[in-house]
Image (tube, helix red, strand yellow):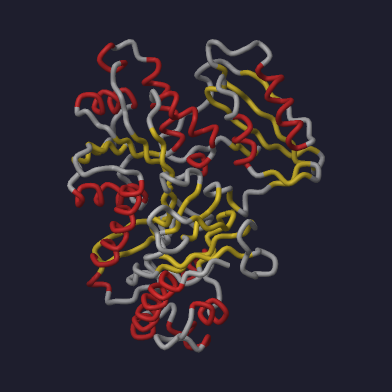
Length: 423
């Protein structure tokens, strides 16, 4: 375990303040803290993690059903809350999340760390290619950029061609979007016959919302489509806010913003803390989003625990090697083989001639089966489907049928992709 007295000392101080606030005014956590015997006098991080039970998404769902519409996880009177967002949804519908100005500002501070890590200066023009709905995601990114002084251009409500034209017209040097949309918009860019657009050079792309941002094959294709633009990954969630950033000196690792979050990686079966190099479920405690906090929240993200020591840093920082590897609840068993969708995507994206793909999951005679559909580029070899099938077969020791479909026949996505279809 890394020796990090300064980082953990700062985290403990913020945790003590947080617990004191929750014991005074949060109806969701007050009884939980009382039962665990925890308050602002907690003496160590290890005491907190050993005594405090986990919070799960179903805990939040049940709380909002019992105390509609916002639930009881509110530390202050409702009159102090000014921001509304909601998650993309559960089987019982989307989960609302409220913030005070102070807690919202704390999340903007986290996006400041993302932009700083990507080396984005305040004189750069940033284009946000997403629709401004109630999802938290790039709202905080947009407001952080404007607060920093970046000229920030919202791209909501525009077609892909209109967004691309706006980026060229206003000379945007930075693009913020999902990995899927970076690919889609990159395809439009690569196919343009307009000389003005073809001459355009984008410097940097900050992606979030999907695991693809830390997959080398996806990053390489995004960069190639955008004439060598640098790709930076980041991850977060509505429930907790922006959590990590990619350090330029340590690509493909997502560093936790430890001033704002206490991160753990646990074995899902034993609930024991994972050791560096081990995979497990990411657990997050918010340290600065006091108005609507989460303590030891089981995120459902599959990660590998690691530490990196950035140049100039006093102590090593907690990071997720390879980014978000997948969702623990997305693993499927195909004829006895455990498969994560991100593992399939990593293999398929390794073929540069694949423009888009879709995976169909079916059940036949109580057995799960997979079939892959591919759109191929104009210069793709005739045996592309066979090559992909062989690579999948070698990786998983399974026969997974792969077929080519007509160009443009598979769906395109502006936000999170839905390439895995269950029938």
